[in-house]
Length: 226
Image 1 (tube, helix red, strand yellow):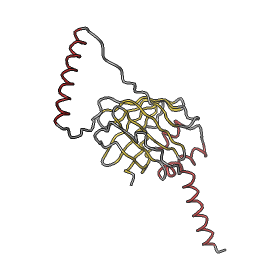
Image 2 (cartoon, helix red, strand yellow; image 1 turned 135 degrees about the horizontal axis):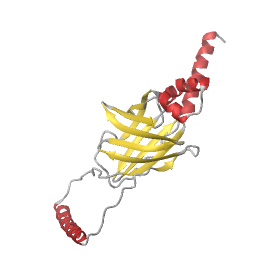
Image 3 (tube, one colour; image 1 turned 90 degrees about the vertical axis):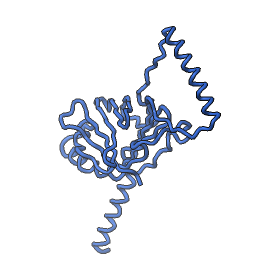
Image 4 (cartoon, one colour; image 1 turned 45 degrees about the vertical axis):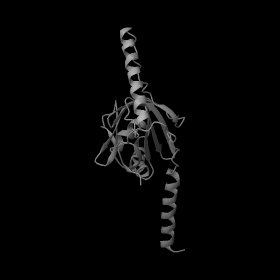
């Protein structure tokens, strides 16, 4: 067995081992049968992690490893994630769903949002007349409620509901969507953080800042999944 064959075989084992250790199939779409589609925006769709900026800040806030183990993880984990992490954003009516994997473990969560841009389908004449009648009736009902001082305001439940996640992961958060920017305030394994998700020059950026960190924020930058 020649030296070059051994090197080739070792390289192949490393590549395939890394792929197996990081691969996990994408879960089914949360809103696969959405009956209230909304207008498409730049956030929606499937994204693939392209690079991580300042991963050390994220690692220090979420891991107890120090010394040499910390150095190894900070050096190698971004490379593994950049070859494996997917991020999917779905919207249906007044709901949004986020799907994210960390190596082989998936987190899938949903939340309620305000004022979605509902996709408008072409209307026929009968539909237009029906909607006018319904709108007129709704205006009358609103006037009656105002006259009787009936409070019809209801708070949006912004809490993320986790459909799928690791049992070892202590995670809670609430989400708001403003225009094409998602803001999440949450707690990850006892560490409070703020996450902002936005579209920037063809890329999707997740900027995460931990409250007690002095290392700044970490940016996960994604490109459209082919």
